[in-house]
Image 1 (tube, rainbow, N blue to C red):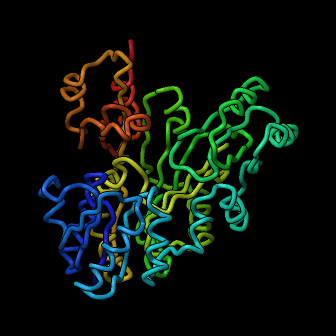
Image 2 (image 1 turned 90 degrees about the vertical axis):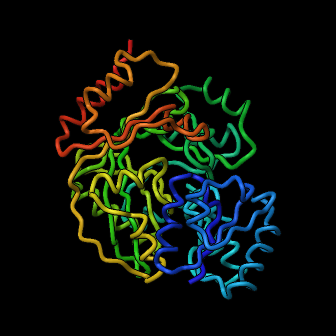
Length: 386
């Protein structure tokens, strides 16, 4: 098998996907813009070969790289990055080189939030009232129906960039006076807890792994208000959440891919769809999969890539939690105090790369326990501020 992996060095822990592919006998062929000599040795060792381009956004350079790999190794069987930013590029390469996976005809419905709404509704999942708006007048027409507050965000976007809650006509005017040059979708603000249904589907769309997470707040609030955040995996998935998640996986025809589907839980057992992401959940969540269940999801993905399917017997043994700290806050308990008191629960504690810090904080703790009350106690200790 020949699998071309775009940007194998970022995020750093994703080299484990490449490592496991290589161990299963695949040719893992990397493309990125970093000088080869600057790659971490663990990334280099995870690759069969590496091809450097000077600009990853230059599509012609990517085509030449794939042409080189085709000449050297034969037909490319898969082209992946597991990164939201490159989804459209992946699809275009797959079209041009006739590679299985998400193609150009599929990309809009998994990138454009306005089109996601229709797919969610076809799965029987409620969505927030909203639509793409271009002018103040169009926005006011929507707000006459929804009322304030509303959320304005890019129709195609990653994370919470350029995402705002608007509570008044003054907010609306301020937003349009500095509106970014892109399609904007405006939606009724939904009050609820954000939860996710996450996992990996095989080539037939069967789930080989799935779990759920509960978030302390949305990424919009985390980024715009510079808050710290925590989110925790569930040991038991609420039946209504699993049902909604499975319906969405089927509606979006997820195959040979990770998925991260976000919902508002408006009350127990009631869910409103927020958005779908055809990639692993962000940050260190793939590591949290492993810590929560004592599994290796990196190897599981590699098995799906190579064989089309995989079998995993697993239990959700622990709640696994990520809790961040922001440099702007003064915390009551030092890092040393956190480790001294809760070190036996900690599985990872490290700084967050700058590109992720607006959403994931400047420092992150990952810890686990079978007891949710213990998890909440640790969160309070980490987040207690002066």
